[in-house]
Length: 397
Ligand code: PMT
Image 1 (tube, rainbow, N blue to C red):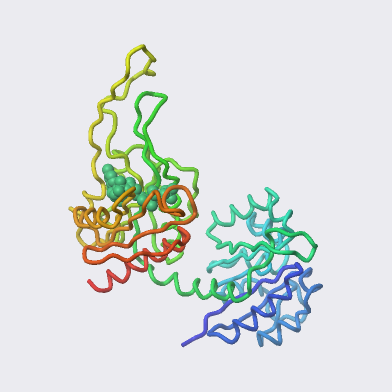
Image 2: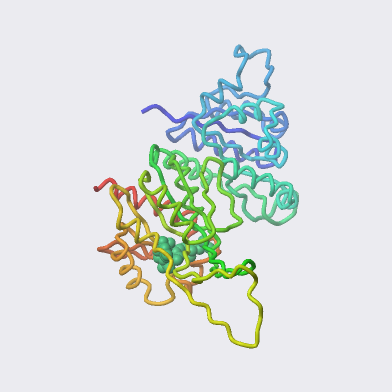
């Protein structure tokens, strides 16, 4: 088997020495490693160390007179299957998210079309500075994976977030990057996410607490696994990576129309949205005025989007969700069967770390025959696991 090519970009930060350990560890696995460095990085670690550890020459200078290749940055970019900036300094992050290419490392990064991973490490105030946070948000938007630093005592004597994670954890992230993309290549994944808003009058609506985080996390995981992803999204402040198609909707009826237009060509359908079961029968044309009387609103049923897709499914693998406050497993199983899902993810609002808005979830994975209880995990991690479970089901069909 040919080895995967990992290009490590070392920037000028104190933790540059840890990149030596990373290169050493990766070289012992099934990877071929090349290293590029910024000028500043060479002041922390001499290139010779990386040459010895990677068994390859190290590139620093775009115009190195000893280099026979006049376009090293393009050659390196073509060669790489994955590029990892470690440590990524505030300066280099700022440059790469704005397309600046004023040295070999940033030019190569710009030319790379492969998977990109950024491992920031810096002083905690530099990390927390809004400018750096905005740049990291942009990196995520561009589809780069940001492996966040950890909290610790930093070389500058400050304590806080900014420390490079354990090198072994970075190795795991790189392993994952290679494990994931291939699994959904050529597949279409349709996801519903977020709340719906059901208008009452021009200034009011009925809604729920869904933030969209769970649905978007599944979308990001599917995108990283190489799928063509469409998210039909209720109102949310979240932004999906470039490359993910987002169809914004407000009401359950609008979500239904968007799903009807897209479900037939999808291979995997995941319904994580919290859809209003009912809507006001009449939407008042003008603001409803306060009076001395109580107000009664007559509600009518919304279409059940998941049930529709379950009924009309042909080849698709379908995952529903269930938000419960009691009898989670029984209710989730009943929904799984009634709505003809292949799997259903049940979460209980009253379980700590589960449900709306947080970054974690605690769920039961229910099929028509079985129930598994999964421990608390991040919504991102859960996203991957749901997709893996669906891929397994597809393989068995
Ligand atoms: O968005 P977050 O803040 O990250 O929160 C995540 C979540 C709690 C919203 C998510 O984990 C979740 O549980 N989503 C489903 C919420 C829900 O509405 O559950 P339900 O039991 O009412 O609906 C069952 C299933 O039918 C769901 O897949 C739902 O999308 C679907 N449904 C429901 C009603 C309807 N009219 N149409 C539907 O398609």
